[in-house]
Image (cartoon, rainbow, N blue to C red; front, side, top):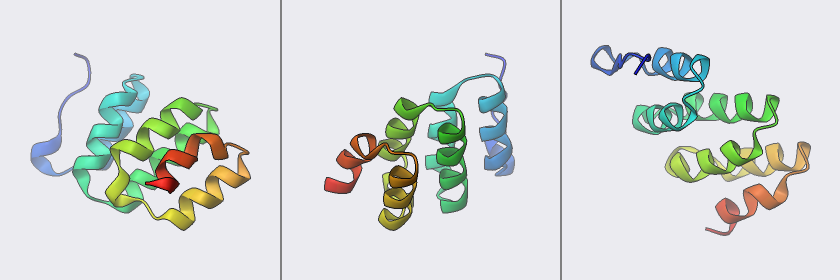
Length: 92
């Protein structure tokens, strides 16, 4: 695998950036969740939305559930007209 695990040094943001660059979106979501940092998770969600990757947005909602704020998710989904993708998160 091309992406290096930089977790030993607690460089979560850098790990997520490398995964995005290598198009390893599942790994990026896992690192964001493992980071326990709300900022990293929300930044990754925004990155998915900027690229129109709504399925990845929905998957990231599931993966990073504990880190995300419902008001932020509701606003992002409403702004991008993708309430259907956010509804499972909001219901849960």
